Image (cartoon, rainbow, N blue to C red; front, side, top):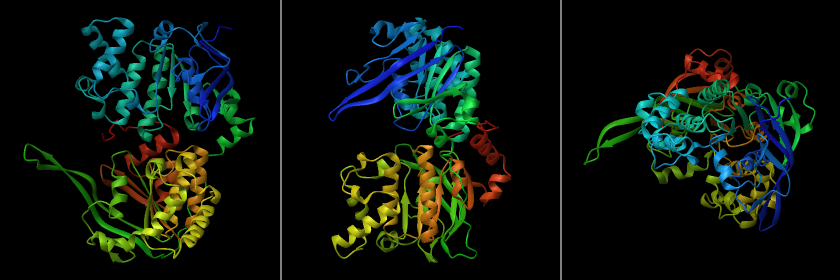
Length: 543
């Protein structure tokens, strides 16, 4: 048997913190053969990225250290190797692509300059030769209008386009090993499918190996030859992909496989009262140009949408980034200006002033995608949840409000004793529960859920969906559920609206939309979400 391309043996990683040593990775061992794709899977904090970054010695040394272990690439030891050895390997023999391309792309340099730099450093190419090679690479990764994109800056490209540029940079020197760290997590489902197909094609073309880090088991099944499952810094199972999916042996692997959002939406109550209704709703943002900043055109973020949300019903809104989903949610809550009638419980609210809207605010709440961004780091959990109670004058005394906080924390599955702690002391799933508790404590009738699960691990996603369904059943809540994750939408929605470029492409009962989509765009979304297949949808995400 041929020697492995990369051999990791008994790798351990410690981090020095004010509270003492943290053992992030413990005795991890795996090999990657030439031309093989190995997937490292596990939830956030399991040590996947730390293990991968150790290979190229990209951890924050000396805070990080390796008490023991070995990382050999083509027989050469990389742990503790000198800088010259590492520099020759990084970007040349081993390349890396990350979850968020903006962390790797320099916002001040053009696309051409950034790809050229890799070629200058490792290949010593002249400017003209580098330009020709850059253009060749950008076409290879499927970047539309590659010639026109050479002088573009990263912020002028969409998420999918930026990811393609980063892949082009990684492949510039035709590496033997590509480390892909969650390269599709931040992308729309259609773009995700395209990127996965692209990586598969490029792997075959360059005969390279891939270390694929992800928490999405659907991707693993499609991409990987073998799978290593990580939990709390250790590999608990390492098997052939099909074997692992057919008969997982470790309890944690079984838990991951069972963590897909499941179940179905609550059966809608016939003739339930309408909570929110909008008719021909429009949100147009002006485009200004010239010295006098005259309005020359409009961005039609929401362009004539009619919908209703009834008591106990969930309306799912799906579509790619830039389709207008979040704008629609904000407009319904009157958090941004819009045109067209909006009714809340039969009352017209589109013309109400801020002061007149305030009493209704407790009835209409929102939960955002990133709980850490929406929770003040300077306030304790109790203060965060109590803020709305104070604003609306609910609870006569501090003790009465504290009782309400305890009750709502129990309802969302949080330990009330932790109410005096701060957001940074909680996991992502726990922070999202805090955000839901903050909305719920006011006893609202309508909640806009804006991508509430997309930043969470699959197992935590499933828990949050179960929680939201339970709360909806108990309080007859009306939800507008915004997401690009169709698996999650299918698990919670009664009615689905498919949006593209501010317009409704298709809408109807969830079962009809998922089982028999009529429009090509909807079919493409479904194929990308459930089969990871790119079907007739170009890289059209709005920048």
